[in-house]
Structure formats: C-alpha cells, structure tokens
Length: 291
Image (cartoon, rainbow, N blue to C red; front, side, top):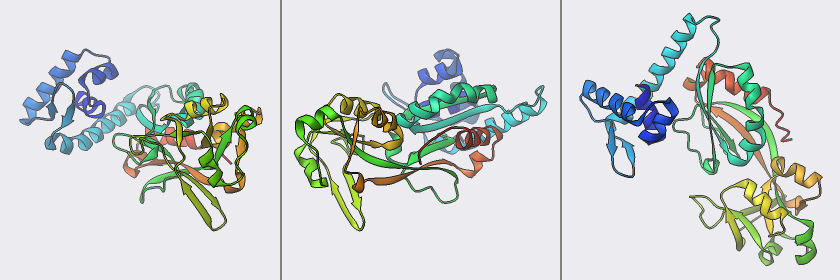
C-alpha cells in the first residue's frame, strides 16, 4: 500500500522507488501483487506517464488514511512514543528557499522521526493541494473548512537596481512601466508573464508590461533585477535584504499592493499528530518577518 501511495503521488515508478529506498522492480512487484489481490488495475501506464485509474483514485485517500493510522499505532508502541510520520509541504520556491529551508535543521532536531517532503515551485500561482498535508500560499483566500495560520502580510513591490534607473530613468506612474524593460513571472497558467497590479486608494491599474525576460522562479527575477536587466515585481519579504543593502530600489510604493501569507491544512490531515506538529512549528517557530 505504501508503494501504491508513493507511485500515485510521484506519478512515476522510478521516483517512488527513490522515495522508498528500494528498486524499481520491487515497487513494480508490490503494485502487481496489490492489483492481483484487489482484482483491479490501479494505474494506466504508458512510456511517458503513470496515471491512476478510476479504481486507483477511489483507493488513494483510504490508503493514505490507513498508512497514517499505522503510523499512529506504531508510535503508540515505540519507545518514547515520539511524533513520527511523513509530512508533505508545498510552498512557493522563493519563500521556501528564504525561510523554510534554513530552519529544517531546527525542525529535524525538534522532531527527528518526522520526514518532511518539501516541494518548491510555482504551484503557488494556483491552488493545487492534491497529495500535500500543508500548503503555503500568498494572496490566495483560504479554503472554507480548512485549518489556517496567517503568517502576516507583505507588499508586492516594483523594484530596480540603481544602475538601471540611472540609465533608464525612474517610473513615476504605473503607466510609465510600459516604457521600461520588465522582468516578469511566468507560469504554466501565464506563460507570457503575469500582469502587474497597482492600487492607490480606489484606483486600480492592471497591465501586462512588455517582457524583456520571463522566469518561473522568484530568485531569478531578483538576480536579473540586481544585474540591471529591468524592472522586477517581487514580495518585499524576499527582497528586503537587497533593498536594505541598496542593491534594489523600491518604486511606485504608493501604488504597492498587499498580499497575505497563509499556511493551510485540510482538517483531516491537520488532525494527525505529525502534520499538526509541523504546522505549528512553521506557524510559531520561524521568524517570517513579513510585517
């Protein structure tokens, strides 16, 4: 059953084998025996993809619950009864690298029997939650009925290097951005770059600047902006050190929008002791400094 959940979540026999620390043939054998026992096919396999069948989709959540229940039972008889289990966390890449990864050693020291599977990427642009116990989102309204922890708010700032501004001038109004080279955040939902939104009082200006560069990674946007390649748009909580050091200059601050940073977990997942422990650690033990 553990092999089934691993393949379903990784959508790959190879990645599932690496996660479990066993060979691909052994994972294949486990799945074959499970399918034989149940009398159904759990996966559709092609040379490029591994997808769940309808029967596989129906089995996935009960299988996760079964494995979680076994972890609880195992912990009850384990010496010391420490919190243990696998916790899957999803966060935007730039925030994850800046504030989660540096504190994983502390988390491991506090909960040595918890395995954290941290996924960093551009999922934060939409609300994909399948397979995750805890998700962090910026500017996304929490789902009704979910357990949430608000980590604070941060501004979305337009930024540029002093060198770039010396060569190209300073934009005074949002419309001036159209005359500048711009570095945009691109994703699978917005491959050409996401629009920039400026708000002052009751007035809102939404525009899609002409892209000089697009990246699907916030760190790359900051790096390009520091190198003088154009205007970037980024969270103040991530750009703070560059701003303090004078490497980047905030622009159009009176038009800056504000976004909330929130941790979320489905109630049935948060009820598990190991998930709850990681959620509370992230919410209370880290110095987010977003306000």
